Each structure stands twice: as C-alpha cells, then as structure tokens.
Length: 175
Image (cartoon, rainbow, N blue to C red; front, side, top):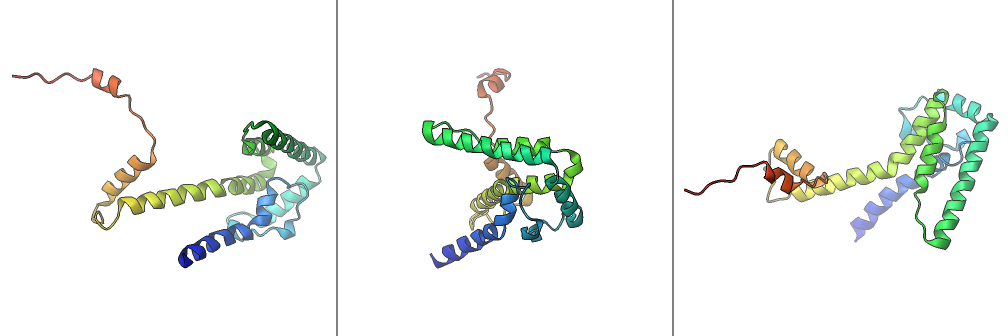
C-alpha cells in the first residue's frame, strides 16, 4: 500500500505542477504568462509564445470568443446536471481552438498539448499494463516481433466479419 500511495502521489504531483497550464485552455484571454509553468513544454518557442499571448490578449475578437465558449460550457454543464444529458465539453474547447488562426500557432500547439496530456497518459499506461501482462515471467523469451504482434492484438479493437471471410473459402472435401 505504501508503494501504491507513493506512486499515486508522484503522478498527482505532476498534475499539480501543471495546474496553471491546464487553466490556459479555458482562460487564454486573462491568464498571466508569468504564472505559467512551461517547464514540461521545453519544445515550445517561449519567446514567440509570449509575444503571441500578448497579441491574443489584446484582440477583443478572441477575448469575446473565449467568454462565449465559457458561457456555453456553463450552460452545457447546467443541462447535464439537471436533465442527465451527457454532452462532451472537450469538443467545444477543441472547436474554439480550431478557430484560432495560424498566426497564433504557438498558443494552439500549447493548447493541443494540454488537451492531449490526460488521454496520451492513459494510452501509455494502458499499453505498459498490457505489455506487463503479455511479457510475464512465463513468456519473457518472446521475440520483439512476437511481443509487437501480441500487443497489437490486445490493443486494437478489430472485429472481423467471420461469415464474409468464411464465405470465400472452399470447403475441404472428405475422401
């Protein structure tokens, strides 16, 4: 249990470090650049990002667009709570970021990176979990090709049409 608690704390601490960065996707019009912890995004051009953020925050068009998006998300959340309608709010956020012109490409890259953190983390963790299941102590001598094939079979959700595939095969005759 102690190792589980330590592991969980380590994973949650990364999300705590990025809490201000997570706010960026919803509040790029008001968030301060100085409060952003962008150490995890060292591939970004920080100077260019800062200049684009200044231009973005001085644009009344984009400020209004994010105000409208936040209002729309509040309405969706209120509907979800009152009438049990489940609508995916992340689509609204993504649609808003897709409207942003390429002049703000660094802002868009940061937004897309933040939007994909949780899903990509989940995908990686799932893949490693499947690898541990496949390559356990009894099957630790599998070649890389065999490992790759087993992982693909586990991860990909492919449902073959057996009736179609078997209709094209010739039946084996008895002698």
